[in-house]
Length: 272
Image (cartoon, rainbow, N blue to C red; front, side):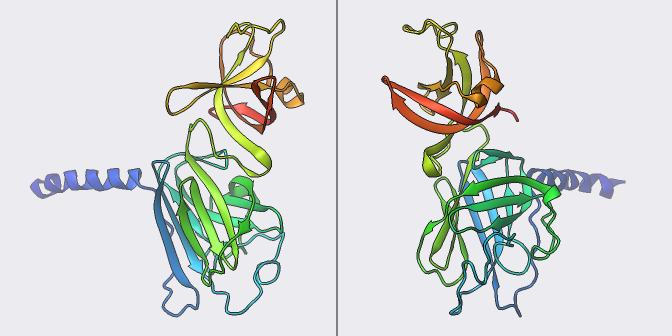
Protein backbone atom coordinates (compact mmCIF):
# COMPACT_ATOMS: atom_id res chain seq x y z
CA UNK A 1 0.00 0.00 0.00
CA UNK A 2 2.73 2.47 0.95
CA UNK A 3 4.64 1.80 -2.25
CA UNK A 4 1.55 2.26 -4.42
CA UNK A 5 0.67 5.55 -2.71
CA UNK A 6 4.23 6.83 -3.13
CA UNK A 7 4.09 6.23 -6.88
CA UNK A 8 0.67 7.80 -7.32
CA UNK A 9 1.91 11.44 -7.51
CA UNK A 10 4.44 10.46 -10.20
CA UNK A 11 1.72 8.74 -12.20
CA UNK A 12 -0.45 11.84 -12.00
CA UNK A 13 2.42 14.05 -13.22
CA UNK A 14 3.13 11.75 -16.16
CA UNK A 15 -0.54 11.65 -17.09
CA UNK A 16 -0.71 15.43 -16.99
CA UNK A 17 2.33 15.79 -19.23
CA UNK A 18 0.96 13.30 -21.71
CA UNK A 19 -2.27 15.25 -21.96
CA UNK A 20 -0.54 18.63 -22.22
CA UNK A 21 1.91 17.76 -25.02
CA UNK A 22 0.65 16.35 -28.35
CA UNK A 23 2.08 12.91 -29.11
CA UNK A 24 4.69 13.19 -31.86
CA UNK A 25 4.68 10.71 -34.72
CA UNK A 26 7.58 8.25 -34.63
CA UNK A 27 9.76 8.12 -37.75
CA UNK A 28 11.74 5.00 -38.59
CA UNK A 29 15.47 4.57 -38.04
CA UNK A 30 17.27 6.40 -40.85
CA UNK A 31 20.64 4.61 -40.45
CA UNK A 32 20.26 2.72 -43.72
CA UNK A 33 18.12 5.30 -45.48
CA UNK A 34 19.40 7.59 -48.23
CA UNK A 35 16.99 10.32 -47.03
CA UNK A 36 17.79 11.19 -43.42
CA UNK A 37 15.24 12.35 -40.88
CA UNK A 38 14.81 16.05 -40.21
CA UNK A 39 13.11 17.89 -37.38
CA UNK A 40 12.05 21.50 -36.87
CA UNK A 41 10.96 22.69 -33.43
CA UNK A 42 9.89 26.32 -33.25
CA UNK A 43 7.58 28.70 -31.45
CA UNK A 44 5.24 30.45 -33.85
CA UNK A 45 2.97 33.18 -32.49
CA UNK A 46 3.44 31.71 -29.00
CA UNK A 47 2.53 28.15 -30.08
CA UNK A 48 4.95 25.21 -30.10
CA UNK A 49 5.19 23.79 -33.63
CA UNK A 50 7.17 20.62 -34.46
CA UNK A 51 7.69 19.33 -38.01
CA UNK A 52 9.26 15.88 -38.57
CA UNK A 53 10.14 14.81 -42.09
CA UNK A 54 12.40 12.86 -44.44
CA UNK A 55 15.07 14.87 -46.31
CA UNK A 56 15.42 13.75 -49.94
CA UNK A 57 18.32 15.18 -51.96
CA UNK A 58 18.33 16.62 -55.45
CA UNK A 59 21.31 14.53 -56.62
CA UNK A 60 21.23 16.11 -60.06
CA UNK A 61 17.60 15.23 -60.71
CA UNK A 62 14.79 17.42 -62.00
CA UNK A 63 12.44 17.85 -59.06
CA UNK A 64 9.36 19.96 -59.71
CA UNK A 65 6.98 18.51 -62.27
CA UNK A 66 9.20 15.42 -62.62
CA UNK A 67 10.38 13.54 -59.50
CA UNK A 68 7.64 15.42 -57.64
CA UNK A 69 4.77 15.61 -60.18
CA UNK A 70 2.27 18.44 -60.29
CA UNK A 71 -1.32 17.78 -59.30
CA UNK A 72 -0.70 14.69 -57.17
CA UNK A 73 -0.68 14.18 -53.40
CA UNK A 74 2.90 14.19 -52.12
CA UNK A 75 4.25 13.06 -48.75
CA UNK A 76 6.20 16.36 -48.63
CA UNK A 77 9.47 14.59 -48.02
CA UNK A 78 10.59 10.97 -48.10
CA UNK A 79 9.54 7.64 -46.57
CA UNK A 80 6.86 8.30 -43.91
CA UNK A 81 4.82 11.44 -44.62
CA UNK A 82 5.89 14.68 -43.01
CA UNK A 83 4.07 15.35 -39.73
CA UNK A 84 3.23 18.59 -37.99
CA UNK A 85 2.43 18.89 -34.28
CA UNK A 86 0.90 22.01 -32.74
CA UNK A 87 0.75 22.48 -28.98
CA UNK A 88 -2.38 24.67 -29.04
CA UNK A 89 -5.21 25.48 -31.44
CA UNK A 90 -3.95 27.47 -34.42
CA UNK A 91 -5.02 28.90 -37.75
CA UNK A 92 -3.27 27.59 -40.85
CA UNK A 93 -3.72 30.11 -43.65
CA UNK A 94 -6.85 31.28 -41.82
CA UNK A 95 -8.37 27.82 -41.26
CA UNK A 96 -8.79 26.50 -37.70
CA UNK A 97 -6.77 23.47 -36.56
CA UNK A 98 -7.02 21.89 -33.07
CA UNK A 99 -3.89 21.01 -31.10
CA UNK A 100 -2.46 17.63 -32.07
CA UNK A 101 -0.23 15.75 -34.50
CA UNK A 102 -1.13 15.45 -38.18
CA UNK A 103 0.29 14.26 -41.49
CA UNK A 104 1.32 17.16 -43.73
CA UNK A 105 0.70 16.39 -47.39
CA UNK A 106 0.94 18.79 -50.31
CA UNK A 107 -0.30 18.89 -53.88
CA UNK A 108 2.32 20.87 -55.82
CA UNK A 109 1.36 23.05 -58.79
CA UNK A 110 3.23 25.37 -61.09
CA UNK A 111 1.50 28.48 -59.70
CA UNK A 112 -0.30 27.35 -56.52
CA UNK A 113 0.15 24.52 -54.02
CA UNK A 114 -2.51 22.84 -51.90
CA UNK A 115 -1.46 22.14 -48.32
CA UNK A 116 -3.29 19.17 -46.80
CA UNK A 117 -3.34 18.54 -43.04
CA UNK A 118 -4.55 14.97 -42.47
CA UNK A 119 -5.61 13.39 -39.18
CA UNK A 120 -3.82 10.07 -39.87
CA UNK A 121 -0.23 10.82 -38.86
CA UNK A 122 0.90 7.19 -38.88
CA UNK A 123 1.09 5.94 -42.46
CA UNK A 124 3.66 5.30 -45.18
CA UNK A 125 4.16 7.79 -47.99
CA UNK A 126 0.91 8.88 -49.58
CA UNK A 127 -0.25 5.39 -50.58
CA UNK A 128 -2.79 5.17 -47.74
CA UNK A 129 -3.86 8.81 -47.94
CA UNK A 130 -7.61 9.23 -47.41
CA UNK A 131 -9.13 12.63 -48.17
CA UNK A 132 -11.99 11.85 -45.79
CA UNK A 133 -9.49 12.18 -42.92
CA UNK A 134 -8.37 15.69 -43.90
CA UNK A 135 -8.49 18.23 -41.09
CA UNK A 136 -8.10 21.09 -43.56
CA UNK A 137 -6.95 22.07 -47.05
CA UNK A 138 -5.58 25.49 -47.96
CA UNK A 139 -3.82 26.99 -50.95
CA UNK A 140 -0.45 28.74 -50.82
CA UNK A 141 1.84 30.37 -53.37
CA UNK A 142 5.41 29.10 -53.88
CA UNK A 143 8.24 31.54 -54.55
CA UNK A 144 11.78 31.28 -55.93
CA UNK A 145 14.37 30.21 -53.36
CA UNK A 146 17.93 29.02 -53.00
CA UNK A 147 19.04 25.72 -54.60
CA UNK A 148 18.86 23.83 -51.29
CA UNK A 149 20.19 20.28 -51.86
CA UNK A 150 18.34 18.54 -49.01
CA UNK A 151 14.68 19.27 -48.37
CA UNK A 152 14.42 21.51 -45.32
CA UNK A 153 11.68 23.02 -43.18
CA UNK A 154 12.60 26.36 -41.60
CA UNK A 155 10.81 28.59 -39.13
CA UNK A 156 9.50 31.99 -40.21
CA UNK A 157 8.05 34.84 -38.20
CA UNK A 158 4.55 33.99 -39.40
CA UNK A 159 4.78 30.22 -39.89
CA UNK A 160 7.01 27.62 -41.52
CA UNK A 161 8.70 27.40 -44.94
CA UNK A 162 9.52 24.36 -47.06
CA UNK A 163 12.84 24.93 -48.88
CA UNK A 164 14.15 22.70 -51.65
CA UNK A 165 15.48 22.72 -55.20
CA UNK A 166 15.20 26.45 -55.88
CA UNK A 167 11.74 26.82 -54.37
CA UNK A 168 10.22 28.03 -51.11
CA UNK A 169 6.69 27.21 -49.98
CA UNK A 170 5.53 29.36 -47.05
CA UNK A 171 2.73 28.12 -44.78
CA UNK A 172 1.32 30.75 -42.45
CA UNK A 173 0.44 29.71 -38.90
CA UNK A 174 -1.05 31.89 -36.16
CA UNK A 175 -2.49 31.33 -32.72
CA UNK A 176 -6.24 30.79 -32.92
CA UNK A 177 -8.06 34.10 -32.65
CA UNK A 178 -5.22 36.30 -33.93
CA UNK A 179 -7.00 39.39 -35.32
CA UNK A 180 -5.09 39.71 -38.60
CA UNK A 181 -3.14 37.18 -40.61
CA UNK A 182 -0.41 38.20 -43.01
CA UNK A 183 -1.48 39.15 -46.51
CA UNK A 184 -1.76 36.21 -48.86
CA UNK A 185 -1.24 36.03 -52.61
CA UNK A 186 -3.20 38.40 -54.86
CA UNK A 187 -3.89 40.79 -51.97
CA UNK A 188 -6.18 38.37 -50.10
CA UNK A 189 -6.27 38.80 -46.31
CA UNK A 190 -8.03 37.03 -43.46
CA UNK A 191 -9.49 39.20 -40.70
CA UNK A 192 -11.15 38.29 -37.42
CA UNK A 193 -13.40 40.86 -35.80
CA UNK A 194 -16.94 42.03 -35.09
CA UNK A 195 -19.45 42.63 -37.86
CA UNK A 196 -21.56 45.70 -37.05
CA UNK A 197 -23.72 48.32 -38.76
CA UNK A 198 -22.09 51.67 -39.51
CA UNK A 199 -25.43 53.51 -39.28
CA UNK A 200 -27.29 51.77 -36.45
CA UNK A 201 -24.50 50.57 -34.12
CA UNK A 202 -21.51 52.83 -34.77
CA UNK A 203 -23.73 55.78 -35.73
CA UNK A 204 -21.16 57.05 -38.22
CA UNK A 205 -21.97 60.23 -40.13
CA UNK A 206 -22.74 60.07 -43.83
CA UNK A 207 -24.65 56.78 -43.77
CA UNK A 208 -28.36 57.11 -44.53
CA UNK A 209 -28.67 53.35 -45.13
CA UNK A 210 -27.34 50.37 -43.22
CA UNK A 211 -23.76 49.41 -44.04
CA UNK A 212 -21.80 46.41 -42.73
CA UNK A 213 -18.45 47.19 -41.12
CA UNK A 214 -15.89 44.73 -39.78
CA UNK A 215 -14.28 46.10 -36.60
CA UNK A 216 -10.84 44.56 -35.98
CA UNK A 217 -8.94 45.16 -32.76
CA UNK A 218 -5.16 45.20 -33.14
CA UNK A 219 -2.53 44.08 -30.65
CA UNK A 220 -2.22 47.68 -29.45
CA UNK A 221 -5.95 47.82 -28.66
CA UNK A 222 -6.68 50.22 -31.52
CA UNK A 223 -9.72 49.41 -33.66
CA UNK A 224 -9.61 49.42 -37.46
CA UNK A 225 -12.74 49.66 -39.61
CA UNK A 226 -13.20 47.66 -42.82
CA UNK A 227 -16.32 48.56 -44.78
CA UNK A 228 -17.84 45.45 -46.36
CA UNK A 229 -18.79 45.40 -50.02
CA UNK A 230 -22.37 44.15 -50.36
CA UNK A 231 -21.72 41.17 -52.65
CA UNK A 232 -23.47 37.79 -52.58
CA UNK A 233 -21.13 36.43 -49.88
CA UNK A 234 -22.00 39.36 -47.59
CA UNK A 235 -25.71 38.99 -48.29
CA UNK A 236 -25.61 35.26 -47.45
CA UNK A 237 -23.89 36.04 -44.13
CA UNK A 238 -26.78 38.36 -43.20
CA UNK A 239 -26.79 41.95 -42.01
CA UNK A 240 -26.25 42.82 -38.34
CA UNK A 241 -28.31 45.94 -37.72
CA UNK A 242 -27.88 46.07 -33.94
CA UNK A 243 -25.24 44.50 -31.73
CA UNK A 244 -22.09 42.70 -32.89
CA UNK A 245 -21.43 39.37 -34.59
CA UNK A 246 -17.97 37.83 -34.23
CA UNK A 247 -16.80 36.54 -37.62
CA UNK A 248 -13.75 35.55 -39.61
CA UNK A 249 -13.65 37.13 -43.07
CA UNK A 250 -11.42 36.43 -46.05
CA UNK A 251 -11.32 38.88 -48.94
CA UNK A 252 -9.47 41.57 -50.87
CA UNK A 253 -8.87 45.13 -49.69
CA UNK A 254 -9.24 48.41 -51.54
CA UNK A 255 -9.16 52.10 -50.62
CA UNK A 256 -12.05 54.35 -51.72
CA UNK A 257 -13.61 57.56 -50.42
CA UNK A 258 -11.06 57.69 -47.59
CA UNK A 259 -12.18 54.29 -46.29
CA UNK A 260 -10.77 50.77 -46.39
CA UNK A 261 -13.16 48.34 -48.07
CA UNK A 262 -13.09 44.55 -48.04
CA UNK A 263 -14.77 42.47 -50.73
CA UNK A 264 -15.43 39.15 -48.96
CA UNK A 265 -14.81 35.75 -50.54
CA UNK A 266 -15.66 33.84 -47.35
CA UNK A 267 -17.40 34.74 -44.08
CA UNK A 268 -17.86 32.31 -41.20
CA UNK A 269 -18.47 32.50 -37.44
CA UNK A 270 -15.30 33.23 -35.46
CA UNK A 271 -15.55 29.96 -33.53
CA UNK A 272 -16.14 27.78 -36.62
